[in-house]
Image (cartoon, rainbow over all chains, first blue to last red; front, side):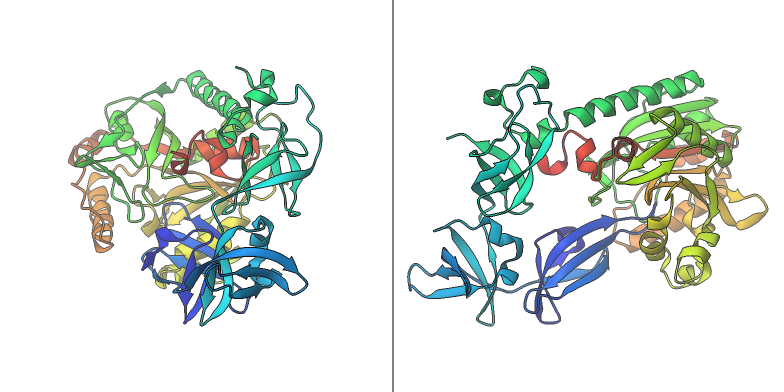
Length: 187
Length: 313
């Protein structure tokens, strides 16, 4: 059982018998008033988005999903292909099902495939992933003032803000839960 | 080592922290200027204990317990006892704690600026706000998240009842009768306030002003106001309630509501209630310093204007 203080981005809940994932979350409280919890959530089966506002005191059931470890093999026209390393069973998930998670998949990476009534409806990634920068403006020596960010694109096609000292070819660590830069990986 | 002289080889491991340098320098400047503003106006800076036996009971503020007492949710009780003892103009910048409050604009430990003035009312404090922000901002306008806000005084004063008429899907009376006041306020009204120019939302209904004086000429409202910029609540002030019998009744009502929600019981602040007898007509206000820094440095999240969030510890 979850309470309002457990609500956060990425939390999976069961509502009216269907699993939902919180996409955006905000806590709000009008001056001296009651706390309100604003959630944007996606139905993990239909993909439809909903806005809901909860009051403190409400409780939630966790989404009861089966998960099993599988390895990411490759992407082709049919989608993203994963394999159970013990049974060699394969499963294919679409781009829509994966959402932004698709940007953080690396060949041979082990992930958890989430299933509801036997149907794959999402994945859980490792919290951190290392990806190589394929496009970023060059680093200008002297321009290292803390706070200076610039956009960079990594090998999966994902674009994020990085510190000015990050250059093309650098390996960087990204937090898959927030999609944000963590650190430069020294090789 | 200054950030300017860092080389690529000595880059910080914790970039989330390192990148806050510019904002934290700005925060320090703002704190310095707030102090200068009040000192110049003959306000005395005070420090009162942050760990206290109990806060003033307020239904929706959850305390952080601390070895049998609690951490203050606001320094107001001690500030008012100083007023009652004859201190006339006071300010304090202190950390305050409110459990379970965490969001884009909330931290469970945050910084409040409070100032109090005897022989003044809430209108005086609205003027103080106009002057304070005018002195802190670099120009006559402020750009926050792409919105331009004109700071030139006077700012609009909008009564709560009128705000409901203008922005909400129900009247103030209906909202109070059906327990929808907070929802209408947070979801329908607040996001629309202070667009283009700061706005004072004033004259809260009696049940929403536990420590505020009844409005002169209309006893079903209180002389309480909130300041909004760009849809964000920045400050809450009021003409102080100085009738200790009425204050006790309102505390009892708030405490009953707190207990009904399963919160830890508070002892009644007896010393405060006794000394309230000698408190002159006064006005007091609390302003969120973190949010002020957000506005002045154009930061969207409160996380970006403090060095550490609880999650970083």
